Length: 337
Image (tube, rainbow, N blue to C red; front, side):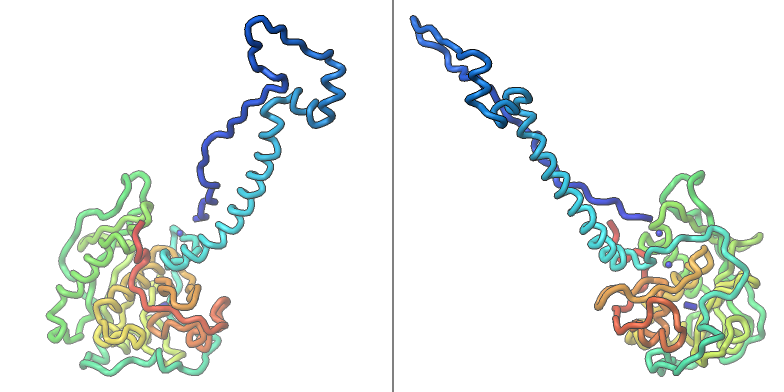
């Protein structure tokens, strides 16, 4: 199992144009009958000195140059400090993080724990107690009928459309879940939410039930999930299997959720959909918690916890080797601008 853009540098606050009026010669009008005299040019220079000559030559521009120099320094300071502030803000409000999307996802398995660096299983990654579920299905899936309009913010010419099907593994008892349709409805509503991946104007989704989709979101029993995603680290996980063209949603997690979500199954299911679909649309990397108490990035492995240290113990990935802890989060862009 298991996120887009460089932030614009802030400009200095707008200010009124600089204005200065300077007349180096006394312009007071002579009273009637008075004759105003001016000393010879050489004598004016002698009295004014270097500063006076500068002001006489350049007028108001002599004031403007040092003022503009100071403003330039202030602007540079604001620019560099602004990048730091925006990095923190982006990590909190855009949990996909500073990832670049690969528009042509690969054919590998993405999202399951590492197969090469197993570690101790953190308590946060253990499947919570809860309702029953089918342990092993038949290893084949049936498509759930249904289609949706194209969902996205931008004109079709500027978007990449991802079509998807919804499927359920044969042999899975869906009685306690209300049948196949509630699973499909949850997927449709999640991907159509503006906080999901369509917050990116370049992404669009459409559900189909005929033809060849970009990927199929498949509710799958735990044993079949282990075959599709791997089980080197013995935790229930979901994944994107590019070879199968399937987003594998682990039935055990769908029924019981994850410890970090504290029993909120709706939020966990929304997270699972957004996270695994993120892999399917080209975000293979996992993202660590960026700051203490921040919302977890959607591409963080929240099924195993929202503390970097817990995930680092499973997979020695860069950025996880610290004690930062986030809050659980189901959305790509939980705070819409």
